[in-house]
Amino acid sequence: MKVRKPLVAGNWKMNGDIVSNEHLFTALRAALERASLSQVEVVVCPPYPYLGQAAAWLGDTGIAWGAQDVSALPNGAYTGDVSAAMLVDLGCQWSIAGHSERRQLAGETDDQVAAKVSMCIAHGLGVIACIGETLQEREAGETEAVLGRQVDAIARALTGSPNPLPAQRVVLAYEPVWAIGTGRTASPEIAQAAHRFVRERLAQRGYGHADATRILYGGSVKPGNAVSLFAMPDVDGGLIGGASLVADDFLDICRGAAVA
Ligand code: PEP
Image (spheres, protein in one colour):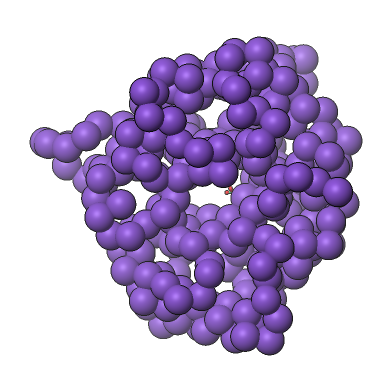
């Protein structure tokens, strides 16, 4: 029996519109009316323009909603950025930070990701901080070196804050880049080894809540593979991309986290 409550977060990426979102929210609400998902913490992360819509549809359901990214800066002349303070002002409970698509497409560095984590901490915004190696790095035997470097930066943010977030609000997501949106999933054993490494590294770097920190797996999670992944001792749920856009699949994955 795991002591950490599983968490499943849906990352909608740059998908959706008012009408299709409404279908998805309606299906999520209807499923919750049929059966509670109280053993799992569920978060959905739509694009920024639809956060208000998420608040309106999910506000009274127990499903939390979050942003896909947050600025590393507090406020000011940073056109296009959205601050942690603004997200909190809106009632947002979570933000993803350091998704591999941001690291790769927007060139985010480990230090910038750490600054985003610090911003979340400073504003009491729950954070889902992403890490993961590319296929090239895995094949070169560099997985632990890459994960270690990424975790060290996040650990510096976690240990350096005068007002740390409670452990339930700090989540890491191991997302091997080669598994994101590719249909190629890490085996449960590969995921477990990486998660164990990440948890031990957090502890070695002085983060006192490593055992209580949820570490999610992300990368082509589907209803058919969710339970075997989530059953691994250090896998505490999932960060779900494509499958989070299909209500039945996302709900099956959430149920998978409850049974695993
Ligand atoms: C993601 O983008 O975080 C992700 C895991 O995507 P997918 O589930 O589509 O691989």
